[in-house]
Length: 170
Image (cartoon, rainbow, N blue to C red):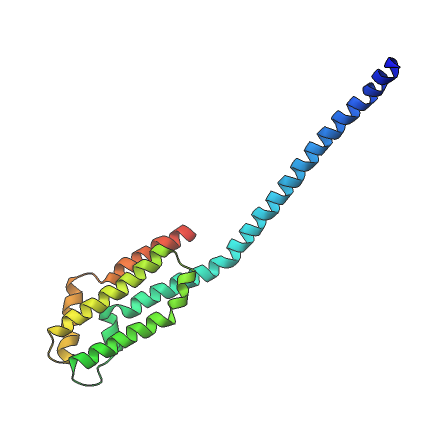
């Protein structure tokens, strides 16, 4: 009887070891295959989203260029002589540009978005300050040009951040 038990174990033990090794090999192969599929899906997702992200960064850069006061006053002419009316026209232009590009925050980093918003707010604040010292729209335009020829526009900082973020993407 003992001989039959030992003989049975002699057959069963190698079969159990072989089955265990086969199970381990198969489970590792399946795990590897699943990880490879996940990795390939991630690569494909990044490949598909990269053009959208780059386009968002392009639009943020264009926004910064369009709200740069030196360029803005060349594009937006005063309607009348009143400095405050011209200021409101400039502000509405900036706000309209901003609203047009608002959705791009989904695709850019928080750092980039904060830099763009900060540059917009700094420009609005500076335009209001310059308007206080201007008698009419022509003087306001001149003062804006003089002021921004002496200091760096906040948009330049935002543009530098945008460019560094794009370099990281590419």
